[in-house]
Image (cartoon, rainbow, N blue to C red):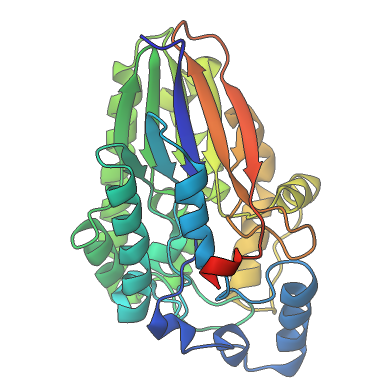
Length: 330
């Protein structure tokens, strides 16, 4: 028996298949008004990610640097979602499939993969293109083999993976097709039942970790009595989605802000999430950065987590990855 179980956590790979590579400039084209388009371009250029299609090599870098952990958790967002409708788009599906097949081949039998928002679709930032699609749900959970909810036992530890898009559906419902809303609500209800049953069955003193791609879901989990009853033994909630510790810090600073209208569905969605962000605190949030990180700080990488077999507190280490590919990978 080892002294500790070793985890590697990777999030927001955002691989770009050839079909997605052909859509360079896709985000700007989805914003019809000039001022919001310029603001988003400035945000991307200086802060977020200047070229979202330029970091495919980081997947192989992660596979090399991760070593041989007991478990790899992929915390969502495998494609660039350049059509904004998730993996129902063939090019985005090809991106996600490549990432998942690569991880499954490199870590056979040791991969637990979370559904991210980009697998299911989301309206473009400051635009009105795209949104959630049931066809993406069916493809993600069928063809791509992603499980909406999973549970892994490692000695005294229980790891749970949930689908943040379903949990945060009250925020995202306006981005669904009207004809599909009833089915999305039914999927959410079923997902919540799974989570309640798993946590109710959890021994009161058992340590657990939660993997949830988008923290927008956490205020809705906080309303669940089964979750409230187990927060004392929650070690941490590992999120992705925000890409950088800088954005996590900004999110905490902006918690409670009013909802913003008039700058597109994406901005409204983000401001609605931040309005309830004070509810994140009991979940002991830890961010797994994107592989590329932010443009400003170039702080991309992944997490190593050590879970002691005697259930002492976990040890966390961020591994930073260089943005520039090695000469042999160019």
